[in-house]
Image 1 (cartoon, rainbow, N blue to C red):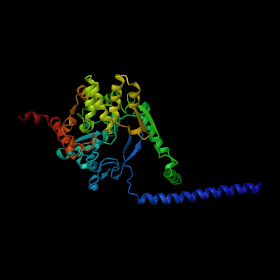
Image 2 (image 1 turned 60 degrees about the vertical axis):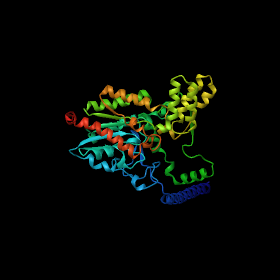
Image 3 (image 1 turned 120 degrees about the horizontal axis):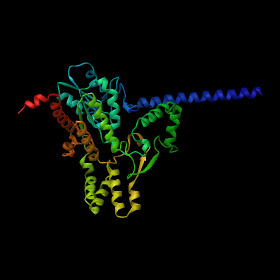
Image 4 (image 1 turned 60 degrees about the horizontal axis):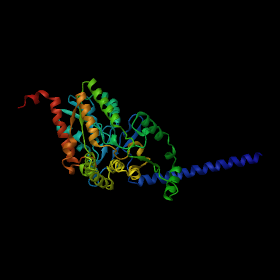
Length: 412
């Protein structure tokens, strides 16, 4: 009996030793692979309050941004607080007016150098003010309100600029995936509690099994939803509430609020908008023709086109085809950021204008100006450097009337 116990203990010890050796070898191999790979660490980190935020001390390129030429111009650098390094000095005590810009990737400056994003261009246009850019790619109005609460006392702004819409309109598979504190707390916990990626032996085996097609990549699962009924990250009603919370917060502190309204690239959404216009006018045949083109374009607005095409098909009795058309497959990784937009920019911009009228905020119609020239866009919704300068100029004109009203009134 004693000899059996001894043999079992020896077996366990040898097994553990073997696993430790394999873990050490896996760690060495994967570390060497990571050192040789050109990949940059993620520019963001998951948090329970905001969902994600800029990673402190990050310096590098943001994955997905267009920087084929002169990549050094597109380096992002964040300080210990996750602020843009170019804004760090402006957080300290200064005599200049302080302007806080909150927003999504259009405020962050996706696709353009940090200094060419409209908040930093605005900073250059106003020697009397410091502009702090708190825009974060992927943010919705829900996250914007939370960010305002978190950073307001630290920045102590004299003016707040806010711009959200695109990410609010993105489809999610269920109500549980809509933006909320519970959602972000849940997902931050999942990322913090997932220890598998810290075990190099697991990572090595996972990599091998994926290469052999015996295992799917993390997040390869998918969910099917109906475009006609699927929720978006922030519903129109919640969007209104979020903007009103931002407006009331600023009103209570006697801080002027400026909304910046953007629009989707008209070149990418031309057939979608034409189809909806025909549908609203009762021209079903023309609506169907335009919407089918929009669907077949397979761009960021094709899912929204499917939603409206399904309506047209349903109206003419093609119920089965309408159901198939409206069926969307969402990868699991779309749970957090959402998929493609399922609502029009005009719907959310109308809400922004209504909130501004009710609370005495100002709306800068940047989207209407940019939409006159589709070449000012980099892609589906992001302005290029020229576009950002136009936005900064429009906002600057509004700031003149806010910060120096007597001077403006005195001009002929």
